[in-house]
Length: 104
Image (cartoon, rainbow, N blue to C red; front, side, top):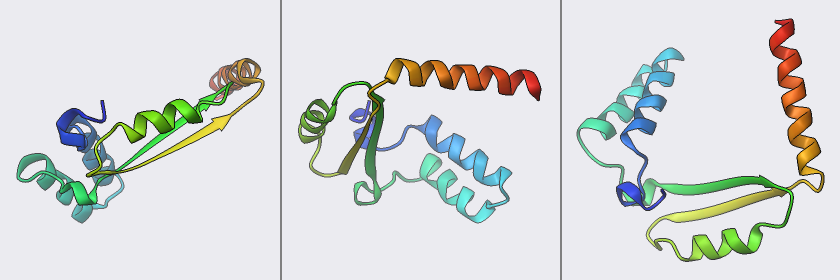
């Protein structure tokens, strides 16, 4: 997916950010995103890719290889957070979210 749109954000992503900025009354910045959607592409020198993962095993090697295979034009970074008890972590998150939803 990072290779789509020449490595730039999709129109959908830009639109989402634009609407959130308008919701936050950051109209001037929202208009910048609207211009990127409608008038001009974001220059690749202003784009940075960040890939963030949570996993039960060490994914660094796979992420590093994937990023190295990508475009050299766009700065790329990866963060992988290893959670040894990943399945328990996921279960506890869903349990917490379930109780949050029922109490509010």
